[in-house]
Amino acid sequence: MPLTHPPLPKRCNPVCIGGTSIDTGLTVMSAMMKSCDRLRCLSCDFKCIRFDDAVWDDGLVSYLFFRNFMPDVAKLRKGIKFRKGHVCFCCQCSWCGIGDEAKALSSVAQFEKAKWVCGGH
Image (tube, rainbow, N blue to C red; front, side, top):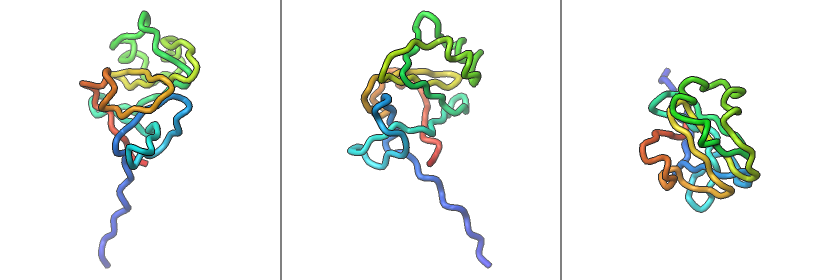
């Protein structure tokens, strides 16, 4: 009897993020962008956390903030401010925010060095 493997998970192409008015899920073509809800960082190997209607408070967050508090959502919430329509994301080593729009991760300035990928849907 031949061995069968489970099907590989589908991955976003391109990987996109977006504000609260953007649907979440799998992006299969640029014309139908959705904010990926399965982001994972290849550097720290953490799943990314998403906060809706929020932006990072630049006066409070830093690399050490995320290293110390990830994945404790209650502690991470201390570093955000309310802003309708915006979404902020983080892993243990990177963070970013986006307004009420959809963008490919490759076009988000904060992600020149970040290594976030779609973890599979």
